[in-house]
Length: 278
Image (tube, rainbow, N blue to C red; front, side):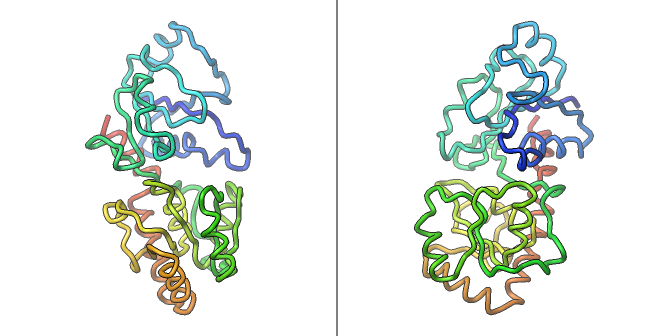
């Protein structure tokens, strides 16, 4: 099985190997596929390939898989190989924008946008993200590793009441170390998205405290079993107090969350799903 992954290369060197194209490449290779990556910023990239390249290069592959790009997307209407796109940020851009590029299937990370059989949720790379030092490095009670976006009021509330540590624009291996340093990792999903932070937190075997989402049940997320879910600031605060006062609860939830994602939500699992769809 020969697969071409199309995605713009990462802009941040520290996060380069965590870019989806490289994570998914490792996932496909786990299943015996041969994978190449093409796109802006990668070696040998041509922004406007001629028809000869479409005919000779793209036809070499059994599947051409594009992963959402920031500001560039090739016209796939001239590619006759089977071609999919994995749309990760449709909760920001809207689901219809990806239909104009001529893909055979649009696989959506957001369930409500996906056609039947085309839901491909976010996940994590278990070759890059994992528990460190057996859990002995958890020095902060509550932390948030991520960008502020529309979470400013939440962040200020949690910093004021619980002295939450905020690691903003912390990327790559430093992100993994940061998440491992929290006893509780707070998360707030944006819009209808179940973001990467859910899976990355569990993959570090850190207790996840996250805003409730209707898709959690189908993903195997169970409140107070493998994560903690809140629907209000009061409920969020109550869970922080409970989890910090009952070590056994926090540790049990963290270990159960780790087992959930390790067995169901890695890039190896997503690669297998794509091959099954193909």
